[in-house]
Length: 177
Image (tube, rainbow, N blue to C red):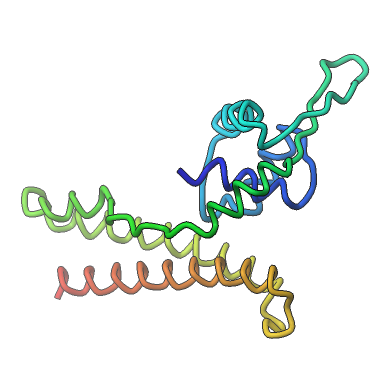
């Protein structure tokens, strides 16, 4: 499971409170691995029990103390070991494809409508990736290795969304002639 490692990856940047980590997660690795704030808090508890993160209480006036989480040397070693492990390819799991497989049971217009809706979703995602990529794309060759790797993850998202858009267009043309 990548979620604990995604959290550790974000914590390599700097220490965060749980709340700030969840917000930062959404704007950094959240575009490639989603998690609810509750999932992030649960994983922080597990990571602390494994001694991969430590928390420092930060007193606040009029509110409960917040915890500032940072990655430990053991957490960094675990993250490094995980990065070096092979990553299995995961099978395609898409609810829309099951619906298409059984799509002959409903009017063709309903399937085309679903494909157009999916197209719009991929278009929005593509635009979000392209916006993120602008930060890096002026001169990607001049980026540090760390920034090049972040840029590569964004480019993977761009390629994925473009392929899905192409597939939606192709399937709609196939159905409507």
